[in-house]
Length: 113
Length: 112
Image (cartoon, rainbow over all chains, first blue to last red; front, side, top):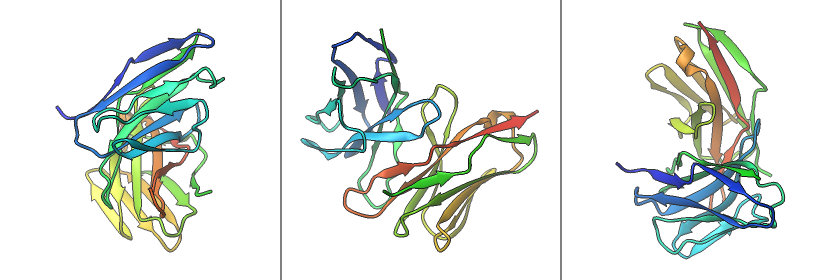
């Protein structure tokens, strides 16, 4: 089945530690996105990529990094510089044509130990 | 800052009623509009998309778009308890690398 796979489902981070969230898609979508969702808040865009080897900062990129070495994969690293990482992280993908609804993975819930 | 605003909730309706969810957006040049449903603890699921003025119906759901007034709404007819969820409005604004901007969502509760 085509879809977006995020792993792990739950992740715990120790102080000073970097952690990487995985996102893989087999929808042949060019564009991929990372969002953060806090309780009672909408989705806030962290990073996005519209083509391999290129990505742009979203609204809240500080403390995060990404790479896009393959079309199918867009991993997100939450660095130790992100002081409040506890949130629900969502990866999405879409085509890059004029009509491009985004489809989401199941999310990763990150907490601080 | 391009904004998407949704009614403050939560919204509670009895089973079988029509639920009306509204959304306004600030970028007059926006072209694409989406409604997502998000159950508690789950990821958003696309339920409707609309690109031109007027109504678009899909089963019990109707999306309405009025670009002159800059609002988009979602009507849910014959509401069911399984419709209880948070509904997110999202808009693709104009400009290079157009991105989805989400509203904060409105929580709908359908009372049996």
